[in-house]
Image (cartoon, rainbow, N blue to C red):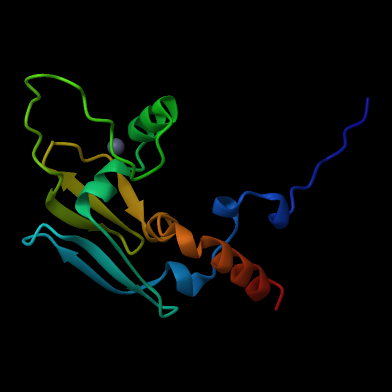
Amino acid sequence: MSHEIRIVRGDQLPPEEKPLPRAAVTPAKVRVRKSEGAGVAIDWADGASSSWSFAFLRNACPCATCQQEREQTGRAAGEPKPKKQEVFAMYEAPARPTEVTPVGRYALQFTWNDGHTSGIYSWEYLRRLDEPRLEALAVAGKAEESL
Ligand SMILES: [Zn+2]
């Protein structure tokens, strides 16, 4: 019986597991448009900027319960739940936070208007929600590491 240790190299990991450059996950400016109900916008230290609606962020809640629920229903982070086909559909208030609290220097915590509050949105998690740029960033991250 061999006890071979398999070393997983960075380039074998799926893009979302690849390291991102530090500047990509360091916010230079965070704007939470709570009163307008618009969402969150972050300017990153690498010069990029990202923004998300509150509904998207609510549907991307990173807590264990929400992640498990998304896995079971096959939804991507941020993807809305399918609307129930009911004749007398209950009105659902659009997701918005009643409170947004910084968690140390690494994350934001939202208290949502539906009472849910368990998700800790780290800068890295938020940046990874900005999908179109991920590939490029992961490659840049690798280059930075090899310096
Ligand atoms: Zn959650």
